[in-house]
Amino acid sequence: MNWISIAKDLPLHGKTQTTCPENCGSGEKLSVNHSIKSYWCNCYRCGYTDSEFKGKQTLTELTRIQQLNEAAESLELTLELPSDFTEELPRHARMWLFKAGITPTLWKKHGIGYSQKLDRVVLPVYEGGSLIWYQCRALQAGQKPKYLQPAYDRSSVMFKVVKDNTDKVVVVEDILSAIRVGELINTISLLGTKITTAQAAMLGKYNEVVTWLDADKAGRQGAYKIRKTLGLVTNVSNIVTPLDPKELSNKEIKEKLCQ
Image (cartoon, one colour):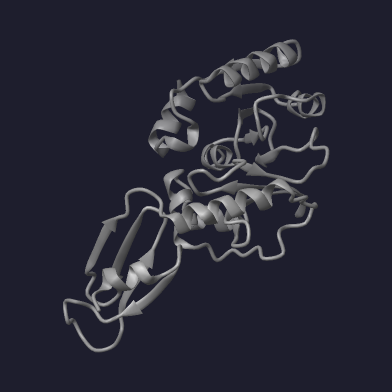
């Protein structure tokens, strides 16, 4: 049986090993995988690789997404990470993070993990080493809602990548953008676009606040609200880019910060 036939027999996100078609040696060294968009293989010995695009989602995959969505509707998350939380991320979760420029070093540094039951990347928020919040981000097309999070008051919660100084801070919307920009400068994610009174009080200690929210209507309104709220207590400036910070290269992020 060739590798593509083996891949098509695997469940979604399944993987196995078989012999390499290049006959590069004995043993089953060819990794065969079934991902959301394709079937693919890679030989650990000789480097042989191949893939086949799947096109539209199969009925099995659509059914799985429907089941995930139905379960999400009645799910009530507590302030504890999902019981099956793991830092061993499957390929489709790793690929989603890679697209945002999040390397293994970064996701391990910030404790990012995965829940197989939810089929979501788990983005924890820590304060002083203690978990205070987390988001579970959908990975599949058609999976709703985009984020699952605890049903608790988060008016004072922010995801912070900050040093021990209060000179300047960049405010972004999402956690992954905060991680990317935070490699260069103090950065805080509001976990959205709307600033709360408690968040404003914490941001007011910085000598300069730079907003870098999405370029859509919600992002523009959010940046305006921050400027209006903090403009009397600190300097506020704004960066606008067509793409989210996490979608830019490190060089592009640095250039925007230096403008």
